[in-house]
Length: 434
Image (cartoon, rainbow, N blue to C red):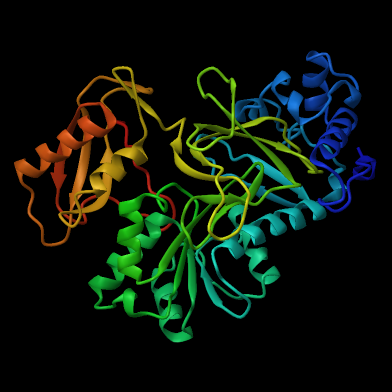
């Protein structure tokens, strides 16, 4: 395997996406044992047999489990590795929440491509050279660390704090007069509460921008309103996927969806998550995002299912950008099916958040059975806001709102403020019985 064989691909702007795609297919056939087998099984032995990206739907999807199955103790990077091991510049890993962590290798050029994509995402949020930005993402071992290189690219003054350093983070805001923070939505909410308990009003701090990523939530109207009130700052969100690229999507100050920042590097499709059929990218369309690398070297992916369920916007944005925008509704692998109705945990949280200031916006869903299918009523714990008392009337009103808006029946349990777990990274909205 030799990355030099990836001919015809210099800067991402040098050639069309169709030409880059064909070059990537040729590269996979030559260098990737994993995809050579899959493409050969689909009758593809030469890149010329694929006309272009319009023919993508004829190729098989790649699933996370496919990649896991390709890895062995002898080949921990999997058979999809498409470069010489000596060309690998960085290896990230997943958190391993579903088992053994997965390793994600990158060549030096892959790393720079990811930085370029992230730079597009974060520049959309309105930060500019000279701004002081505090990050709470660890620089390793997880892929979120790759986004931090974009801060250098944008000329920002980067103040890395990392995960689990709440006191250090708030002190840095106060002492260093930070202009922006980069956190998950859950952690942004936790910081408001943590600071208030210590007599600190973050709304009066120097922070003007809160850039959230890592989980859905930053685009939910009530969650965003809560965060903006608590921070006294504009909240924008970003989204990526570890196997493809970090911060692929970034929201501008108009907050009308996250702009796609991967043009020239990644091709994105929308599919029906149940049938796998390709859906048109048009205003209001909903479905699952599927990604294809156009110039990745170390471990390129072809039609990788993200499990991110989104709503698409294609109309021009007031900021002047014309690229595709999305709002993430939730993850299809987190979705519950309550007597035939698809229910996303984030959608439940969004409806519950309509009842602020009586509730804190923190919820925990406690399914009564394993798997996605659930019998109603679905148990949901809803945390009260500080100083608010639970009432049967409130629980019934929340149940009625969920029934009206999401068409399923819930059993709401109101619990005292602070009784549900907080996170300094991503929050778990579902807790199954052990």
